Length: 345
Image (cartoon, rainbow, N blue to C red; front, side, top):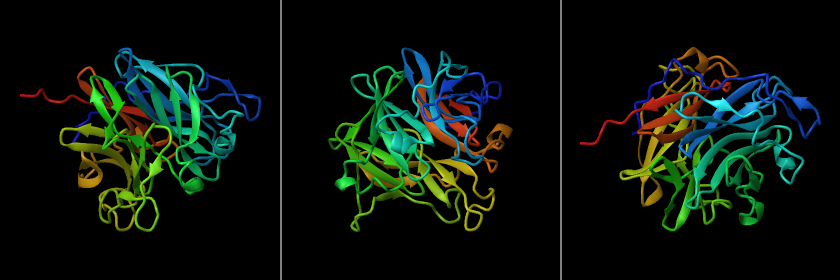
């Protein structure tokens, strides 16, 4: 397991909504305060010795319900992984482009980041049009300019999965210093994805993905909810999965049921678990945690859009000898937790 993680009180939450930054909405051709309502669910990586954080930001337009606002993706930078400076404009947003039918009016949500061997960046994110959430892929040379490649499964089986809900793409990576580099197993790239079950897909190019299917032709489930546990309601892929010398570690988000769940926790609370898969066979589950490794304990994790409480993990990076876990809190802010591994003997 990774951890234990500590939440530094002096800096949390590290990113909160702000009304100062504005951008022109391509949908309405008007200026909006693009991060005024919520800032949460981040991605992260290290570039040029600094932590770069991509985060989902919602403006205050739309319906007063979760998923009722337009989301954009902002960028913040830090020299210590704790104190961040934001850019005033989003680096990705819904535009009047080829992806508009998938991204209006809900926008671009919940990024996750990996690096390629040659230094490119791959983002998985959710396209939300108010009808079907779709897992999508974008690429960038610098984290500032992004090319949208569209839904991850668009070309599979004549569009079989294009009308199926999908989100939360956690690509398998290996650790190279402070970099998280997309890793191949058995000649393929792998990605854990989706909710309420975690499913799995492969790719040759990190852009076009093919879900593995079971004997019935449905997407193969590699992690499912468990009655009586903290993950009894749902499981959802978290940060990029990490290839270690003991197997593949997948951090995942977990929802608790009010009935047949963990009675020690509230219903619908979101916590975090960890699962271990065979390094040579990414669909083979070896073990999983029976209790959360992170859960809502602080006020900022239980106040906001989602009052039941969330510690929604989406990014975990090595940086200067420590591991930094970045997560969304109550669908409203960004938090950080830190683990300093003991020195090897």
